[in-house]
Amino acid sequence: MNSQRMSGIKACVFDAYGTLFDVSSVARCCKEALGDQWEQFSDLWRTKQLQYTWLRGLSGHHANFWQVTGEALDFAMATLKVEDQGLRNHLMELYLTLETFPEVREVLRRLKAGGLKLAILSNGTPTMLESAARNAGISDLLDALYSVEEVGVYKPHPTVYRMPSERLGLVGSEICFLSSNSWDAYSAKASGLRVIWCNRFGQAAERLPSPPDRVIKDLGPLPSIVLA
Image (cartoon, rainbow, N blue to C red; front, side, top):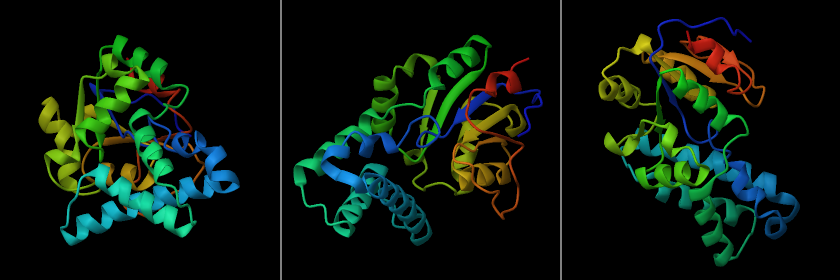
């Protein structure tokens, strides 16, 4: 881990799912209904959700993240033989009220107090992001929510990573992008942003070009890295 200070940062832009919001909290809330396979179910749902975004991006068949999330859920339910339409509806509803990781609100508060612009850059639809931020009580700390729906293609397309600079009027070196998804962190760095990979799950470094500038275990150290 490298916690050396990163100078010249004027904005922090966060990935949403897996970085600010704990996607496993959905299945965890339904442990009783899903039984012992709830973690397997959660992992499969998330994996297929990401695969569908990549495949749709490569094939040019874009559909919004709400649809993709539902289709990935249907795949997970069919694979693990979970047949319950009421449970499906409940799981989708819970995706609008995801829990944040424990340190998130305090970190955002400190960054905001330090004068930084704060935004989300996500595959999520505007409605999904607005609902999650509102229910998590962090809407007041965010200056903007940037959805890939504005450009019609999913991460890791370079067009997505150009959005913060264009919208905030800053150059890439003035923006720190945070993601817990390693492929997202590496792709953002390759697109010209300064990047901190929040490696929550202790993954090995990717064998990809453009490694991130820093690696941290959670968002806790972030204010001491980016604030003057």
